[in-house]
Image 1: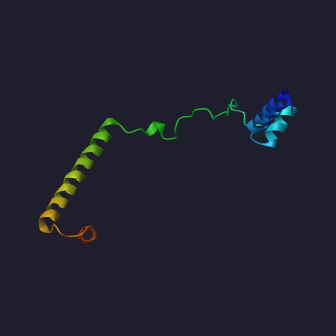
Image 2: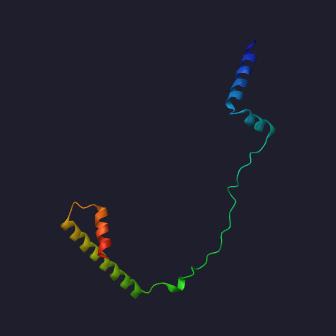
Image 3: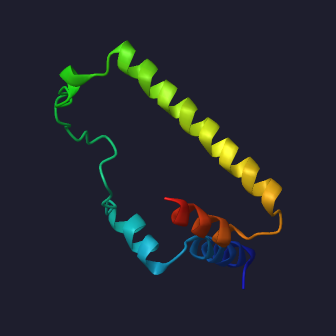
Amino acid sequence: MSKNKIIFLTALTFLIMSCETMKSIKQGVTGEKVTSTDEFLVKKKDPLVLPPDYENLPTPSERETAQEEFSKFEKKLKKNSSSENTSSSESSAEQSILRQIRKQ
């Protein structure tokens, strides 16, 4: 074989090997376009609306009473947990829950 044929066959081999599949070769030769999703398509959203209970927002005085109730609850919870810890430190969580249920 001549030197030109060897170079031509080597170049052709590299060209064919560089393609992933025969489908990609077909797409390249025919100029077929790949269908894909439209990344620029913008989906319209609903307009902004006020929530239904917007008029019923809590007043500052209601917030203060809620914080007071929460702090009372925390104090009571700490008091109960500290009394349980002093009475029996080896009791399981299940037993402490059962004791709380019986108290109520």
